[in-house]
Image 1 (cartoon, rainbow, N blue to C red):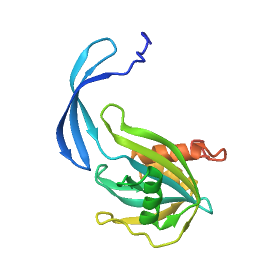
Image 2 (spheres, helix red, strand yellow; image 1 turned 45 degrees about the horizontal axis):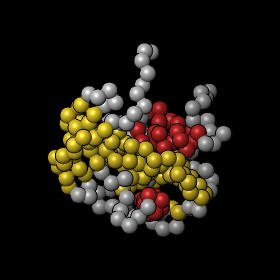
Image 3 (cartoon, rainbow, N blue to C red; image 1 turned 45 degrees about the vertical axis):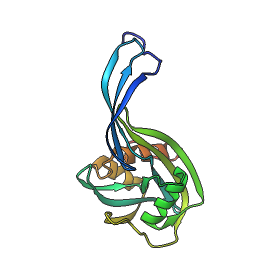
Length: 194
């Protein structure tokens, strides 16, 4: 590997909004100056409200997941509950609301696994991943108007199979699973079995 990576941030010289459908999405073009002085025009950025995903487990240690069609992937996927931040909420509030709405579960032990840009260069908003342990079902699930979904309780072994087979087919869900299980010294997700 040659050369050192510049640690300086890019400087935004100009920003022009090309399309906006508030509060859902905004497409903008930025003219940016790189650390070496070069200027790149029309470096596109896609903005959306922050979102979250919840890796919840029951008192028996099963993962609380949702099987549903995801249009971006063009297939039915096994996903973690989650959604977009609503006005007046924190992302923790959003996580608790989404877990309850999509699955009917609530939990007592919550923590953040981190907040990440969804795309390395175009950003596309941010997603915070949460861990909820010892969850229990308290109400029936109430999915939104566009969501036909099935709540599924999944063992670690079956999550491993779902990831390998592509049923866990979205990067965010694969990352959330990996982060959650990496905290557990007994997790066998990344170990070979058999």
